[in-house]
Length: 434
Ligand code: DLL
Image (cartoon, rainbow, N blue to C red; front, top):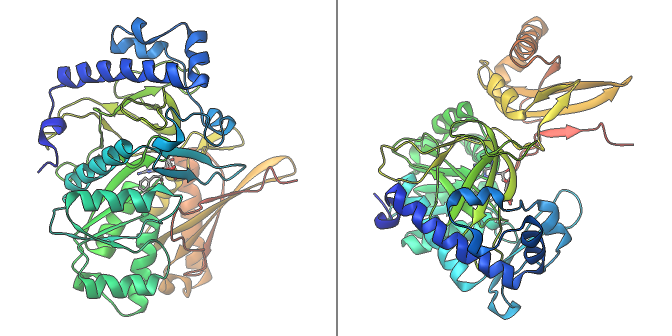
């Protein structure tokens, strides 16, 4: 099933021809309308006419999050303010947020790409979509909302929070699709259990989860606890919001990037060199149809790989692998590079351990320390100390063997780790605190 079969199944040559045409026209537009790009393109010695093939993309300069911060709030916009109909912003953990503006056409495109994403995930017009992504400056809520309406499904604009009520609505309104962060879905499962509600009695069949990294093991856990098919959705506000890429329900093997609107590249984050198909590196995205704030070679900092192999679903758009983390999330513990997702994968393989954890990094006597706090089930927690110790030692050993880093594992009481209604905070790094 497709939402826009013609574009979702374009032959590769047609995708590439369209990309080249759209790339040239976008570069011409920003060169004309955005002083930042006028300058950076001139510095790189490229203009719209000198782009002869897609290979020339590699000659274009990168755009960094810092460039967006420096242009706060509107200086990267490529159209006059009167053409902007919506503004979103991503919550920076430090400093000012990153601001993005959409024209009506941008909103239309986003709605279509979200509608395509819903259909790819196995959602139909007749579905009732329970949307628990936050509504507001965050793109999750409104992005999914407009896509659901575009598809013609019924959308329940829940936003995050008030978890008990969420469950009541899901039950009473017969929600068939759930959209929220993977961590919030687990929180919901837990809250439902407390209320004596079994997800098997609900009508949910598909969950569309993203906005934060999660592992394959967590997918299985969510599918089991919520009794639905869990699909990974990717996006970022700088590029659009949710719906830049999504897994298809047929294969669930990589996320299709909507290549008629975005050109993805994988680069070596240190050298900036473009990496061949299949190699892991940083995802870089060029928007080729956006009007409000087009971006050339935006450095997402997200780590993945790309494949152009045909997919069983019939979509011809390239697929990126599940994100293994962000290059700026990577922890360096005594010189060893560790992604939180790698630790998650190990934890999820241990029986009795719950999918709620936090990594605490500190520095003692000039040495980095890592403490992994993870919840265990009630029955295990009330078990003998000896048994608990055996589990933590086992996890410490596995982390040491698989990741080469020494850590201390602390098994904590059920429900003692803060639950999130949006993006989960998995790492507390105290090293840079004075
Ligand atoms: O999180 C947009 C979104 C909303 C995506 C709802 C999916 C669902 P930002 O707040 O700008 O936008 O954060 C973007 O979140 O660069 C990734 O690091 C991370 N991220 C988003 N989706 C995934 C995913 C939204 N499926 C940042 N897996 C991105 C891993 C993800 N990380």
